[in-house]
Image 1 (cartoon, helix red, strand yellow):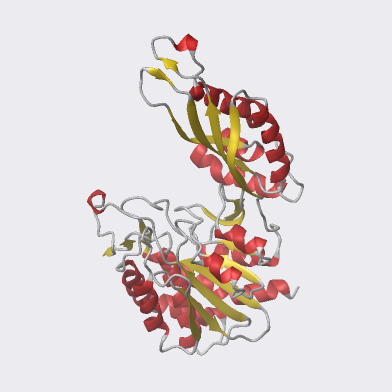
Image 2 (cartoon, one colour):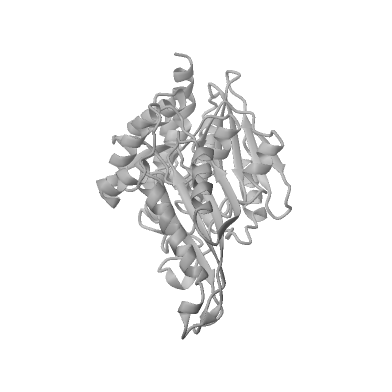
Length: 416
């Protein structure tokens, strides 16, 4: 059987795909608490008639993970990854049912785009192989995981720690597209999360000159960081430069070209938390702040962190109480996986697919650091985490087509 047969099956059975998506949306998996037992059971029920290997992997009884394998015609393995939990929702803010509702050619619900819709499309691609008696050209592995939305350890990290994912490449079904603008995410940014503590000298608020304001010291320290690093152009690796240029082009319509270029050419520094003081009429003698620094892939995070430590040491009354950091990761724009996903998506949509960096970092970083080349791709909408999150039916279908055709395209790329 050919890829055309798989695509024809998906398009001919689109109503079954919609039903599957609605079935997944009907099960609340808001995280917290992130209970995914019911949705895992629903997926197991869907898979039961298919000739596939299914296994639960559990470290938290309320947050199981599901591993599915379909043997193929070679010893290469392509992994599909999707998370089953969603962010919480306020039903009063929705005009449609947050647990799934179809209105004409739109499917509404929390997770419709992020990412139960993509999970449904992955499952339906798997069904297309089984229903058409098509052997995939490579082994296919699917990891449907819990605990992603809160960055918990019960999902993908547990699978990686247990060496349960033995794959040569991975595509994550995170939404990477907006209506009319499509992309595959092939890089992420590095991060430095700092907790700063400030000490001062207390005084009465009517006589602030007699004290030293700890909050003012924090503001000054963050301002110094922005002056030293926020205006210091990053040294971008030559291998990453094409990704930066395409990222700027992708983000320019939504944020402006200058802002998009600055986002990747310079560190971003965000003061996310600032706490201190006891009363309006006192000079605070202690305070703390949490600062988020992001760096483009290819920048060596430890070098920047060392400079930040030197900077903080120059600020009176400021110490670093805690720090965590990561290095940005990237796939080569012309790598077999990137070429396979981008070209398959371009054929399915008839539109350009940008090869860009994410502005943050997530499970793709974890997988790349584990040695598995990884990209994120799913057609979707810009309603992620928003009230009335939705996905068009045609998008569900196109995602399933891309996921079904991807193994053949990827095999052809790695064989070149």
